[in-house]
Length: 234
Image (cartoon, rainbow, N blue to C red; front, side):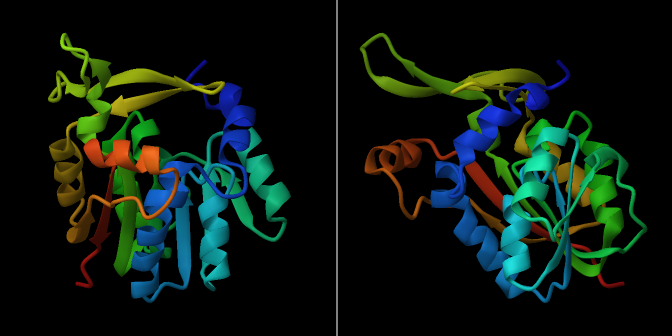
């Protein structure tokens, strides 16, 4: 089991359904699509496209999107749901595209799954055209460094430990078991800057819907960040 995604694909597809999980449908989709709407994008690459949900959203907005993913059962589901779409096997660390191929590259909760983020970010920057954008949604680094627990007084707290230590860990829920990577936010920022990209947008998005109990818990310890990085035009 390399990273758990092949074994977890069926449970993942069931978990997301048509509308997406809480994080996507109630926290990330709207602000991610708002950033897309602000740009002049005709072509896009979705790195780690999974079952193709965000590719379909891009296509609905007139953007010609290619999705890549290393997990064949997820690609098969993407093709089943979107027969006209373009879904290919591939890894972020070895992008099989020419330089400056895309107006937009998307990493929607995929950086946490990538063992070699330096190669992945360099590759994503390489295939961007000058003036194009790399749009990232990722788990917040403090959330991957911690977990909910009950303290000695019986209070429900979010505890963070060993934040600066990069490490892989297995995450399990509702039949899904996959390997995620914790990295300090500064590690990602340094790699993106080293790739010559310029930060245009950074947000810690708040929920805009969903179960009020989940919204309240999220506001105690948010999980996500959104970043848009632009490749300089010259």
